[in-house]
Each structure stands twice: as C-alpha cells, then as structure tokens.
Length: 560
Image (cartoon, rainbow, N blue to C red; front, side, top):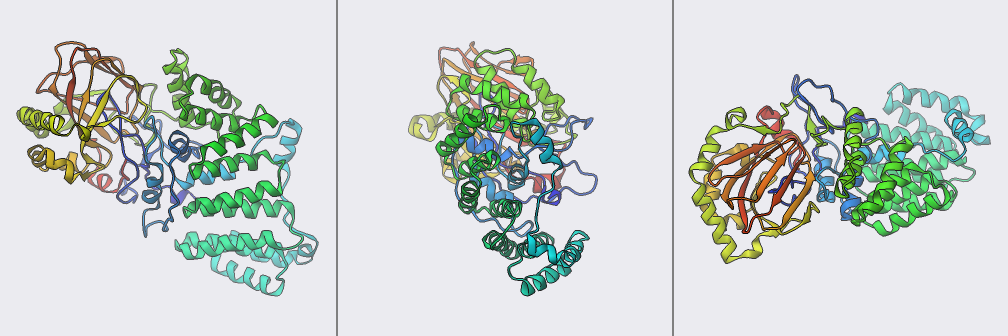
C-alpha cells in the first residue's frame, strides 16, 4: 500500500494560538507527490537535518482521532487514486480534530484492520505468531498443485494471468474456497495496478462469496471478511464495512481483536456510544488490552473526561501492543496531562519525539514536510514576505475599522472557537479565507480588507491556513497546543490591544501584541495565550505558506 501514501494533509485543527480560530475540515487540491529532489510530506515533524523523516510503524490511528474527538461522519464513496484524490474526499468526513492534529485516511484504517492482537496467554501469543493460517479444506488439498501454480503467478506480479488462472479454477471447482479467495486477491491486486474502483468492487464481492461457501476453513473466513471490510473502508463504504465487522464478531464472538475492529467500525460512522460499549466489553474480558485502552481513553477525552482518560491512554501506550505506538496517542496523553497540571506531560512528548512522532518536544504537528526550517518566531525578512507585512502594517487601521464594523453590525458573524482549546473565557473569529477559499459573504463585510489581500497569493492561496479576525475577551486562557502542520507560518496583526494583560507564548518565548504591528510565529510549535486585560483584544490572523515550500508543493499538498 506504500504507493497510496501520497503527501497527506487530511483534516486537522486549524486553530492554533490564541488567535486562531476554528478550522474546517476536509481537503482540497490534489495529492500528487513532489517532484524529484523536493521535500516530501510525512506525518511527523522534520527539522532541516531531516532526522525525523518517514512514517511511524503504526500510523493507523490517523483517522480515529477525528472520530473520537468529534464523532461526525458521513458515508462517502471514494474514487480511485489519481482520478479523484481519495484523501480529499475522505478528509471531508473528519471535519477537524479538537486539538489540531488528526485526519482520516483509509491507509491508516488498513493498518488497523491488519494489526495482529495479543491474547492473555503469552504462550498462545507466541504460537499464534508462528502458526500459519489454514486456508485449505479437504477438497482444496486435492487440487493444491493447481492452486499453488495460480498463486505463484500472483506473487510474481503477473496479476492478469493470476486472475485468469483463478477464474478458470473457480469455473472448474465452484465450491473451492481457496480458488475463490485467490480470485478475490488477484482482483484486489489488479484493482491496485489499474487503479480501478470497478475491479475493486468485484474483489469485495468475491471476498463475500468466499465466506458463503460450504466447508470454508475458519482462518479463510476471517481473512476474507477482514479484507472485505478493509477494502470497503477504502472506498468510503463505512456502513457496509460495519456490517461486515458485525458478521465477523457474530461468527467469532470470543475473538477480542475482531471486537476491537468492530469498535473502530462504529467510530467510522460516528457512533461513539456503541464504540465505547464495545471497548468496555473488551476490557471487561481482557483488562490489559492496550489497543482497547487507548481507544477507550480517546473516547473519554472526546467526552471531555480529561482526568479519567489519562490512565487508559498511559497504560495503553505502556503496553507496547501493536497499534499503540502512534503520535496521536502521545499527543493527546500529553495534552490531557497538561490540562490537569500533570508535569509528566513533557515526558510523554519527549518519548513521542524519541519514537519519531514529533520533530521536537515543542514542535508536535503531525502533518509535515521534512527539511523545512523550524523555529518558533520569525522576522518578516526571514519569511521573505516583507511586502505583505508592510501592506498589513500600512493599512492596519482600515483592517481594524472593517473588523469593528462587522462586530457592531452583525456580532453573529464572529463564531465562537469550538476546538476545545480554551480553559475558560470568550474567544471568537470572523473568517475571510479558509483552506485557500474565499468566503464571499464574509468579504462583503470587509471588502477593502479582502481587496487588499487579493494581491498576496502566499496567503489567499494557502490551503493549510486561514485569514480571519480574532476577538478575545478578558478572562480567557487558551491551553498550550500545537497546530496540525509545519507547512504554514502565522501572522498576527494587532488591531485593538489593551495596554497590558494580553500575551502569547510560543515555545519558551513570550511576546505581546502591538497595534499596527505584525508578529510571526510557527504554530506547529506549542503555544499558549492569556487575556487578562480589562477590555477585548482584536487581532487579524494571516496564514502564509512556509517560505521554503516549492511551488509544486504549494499546488499539491492537500488542504487542512
């Protein structure tokens, strides 16, 4: 499946910093890979030295964070690969992660559904690792030579010949489970080769046929239905996948790994309540199941049961079980600990960094391009966007006045921050551009500001950012958090700034805003905001592409 891992942006929280606003989900734009020599996107941080490149060994949880933290999904069909960017379509399922780090993709679900689970008995676990699945019934053993010959074609990559060979075997021996399973696998392979959803749908149907034949070996039933579920998910058929998973659990009620997969199936359709019940069931039977623990912990965190979620997340990570070593687990365990004042948070961030999930303890974005310059604060000259900065500072009063006018005439246009980033207080935004798309209605309220920005494609075309007004009222505190990607920088133009009481920390450095002046920081680094003044604070947020991204990358990176 490596060939399917294009640069991924997925849905992530757009909100970062005490001025960031609510992000919207989904993805726009293609996902073609950067050209030769270009930096490639990964799900982890990347300093210029590139030491943290590559994907983690267990990145299946990408999609789950969105589900667990939001529980909003829609069944959407996905068209294959380059025909239509399947990540763009599936990104729309996730909306955004409440803490700014997650997206959904089916490659990750694939890893989940293929993950082998541990049992309570260590000896049984060792046996299971060594034990090969039994795929042949008595009849299939009598035609093993023919089956092996067809399988040899498939394994050698002669996919079309393998399809023909297995089709002939199915024609001759219609009751052969192994022949039909080989046909399904060959169709699956051919679908990948030709990037054909039509052929993949046929493979999905053939996997179903295998399980419906008489005298099918137990292992073959499991393999067929699990692969069917997985491929259904790839096409965005989440409810169909859930039905397949339900059937598996009915057939094998004592298999906790299948129940864990069923929990995922519920999460994929936004049914967090049933998912929670499934994981509670698993933990009642196998209290040490690390996979179930981390999922259960995230569901608790989604319910804002922060303190209650911590032991499940922590123990799940400590279990070291397959599927638990993922950046999102470290991210959210640390975040939960920070919110309850537990100083162990940075220990887990450090461990996440050492495991390759974060670029550093401070820079914890998960959707990154390796090799980009990484520092918390930037000067205009360092960004290369000096003309944009000059224009913002030269026209700050115009921008301010249009923002204030919108506040006076239609306060409802300023929407409350809804990414669960506030400990307390009142914080709202009025968005003009989102993911590189202009909000025409919003710009009617600030026409001169929008006209001014149209001259600067580095911001209006930044599909991993926003342009928006941000108002924060006294008594507001924004939790320490990080943005989703290192592909953007964030500009803050001070518009209405109280004389004292407002400050922003990014990494170890704390600054204050000034009216008519621009601050620039990289919101993939941890940042935190305090508003302890006696009146409101209004700033203008302008996201720009990281200056070291190539034109090709700016065109091809999926939106966030």
